[in-house]
Length: 359
Image (cartoon, rainbow, N blue to C red; front, top):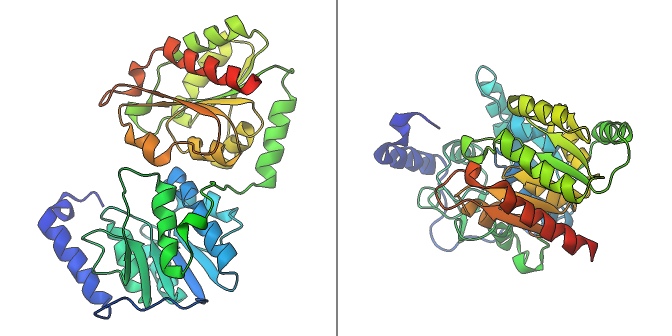
């Protein structure tokens, strides 16, 4: 919620207190969750990367509680990922006006036994949903604004641990030991997206290595300028002239992708229509070079080695960095934009990783 009125601390306290009155809980120690809840509703994060790092939690619930229906509330942003998630049995789409009332009615009618809130910071919309579902058990990451709503608040270290680590902590109230759960990120596949990627790859001459450049940036702090991308490609081609490149971009960065393709014949600017098409391309390359976006956990899920560039917000690596694949991370100075990174520094990381992969 971006309304400045509701962003004021006093108003926020009143709103969360109201939500707590809508969803009262028993005093004293929290009651144990049922061994086999009929329905569990997870209020999934909005961003693509956040949804992906939630996957260890969803996977563990589906595997350890096979008689339980696992549902997620998502927005249109992450609906595509939820639709191919084999660990999810039902999707409830949260919509904005004018469709908001109908989407709220559908969520209220779901009547879950347990609602899970994987947010470690004040979450207005999710707290509203938590209250109106009237679920008898409400499990969530502890926060002063949330704890009055939660029957089972779970301690965590939101700023200093990987998000997947915070999320799997939510399994403890279900009787699942978080230390026994794999932190491996999962992403589903879509046959149409996989066919699209196969066609794109087949159209190009063979090359080695095959490298994907993800130039999309959701924030200005994450943009890397065209001249630096050009310099990086030159460095790689000078040492590995048979390299083949695929450039992935959002519509806003498409002119940059096309400018790269014009200058470098071994480079193809791929016009993807959705996230899963881009992920399918990445799954077929030897190396990904990317700015800090949801593509980092997506590539991790498809076991793709990567060089990831980060702005001065180093916490993004701590909380969302690749955990289970070979990688190098390159950081701008704290507080500085990613554009401060020099091509030479990034190329050193690329060269180091490629040498490691070739051993």
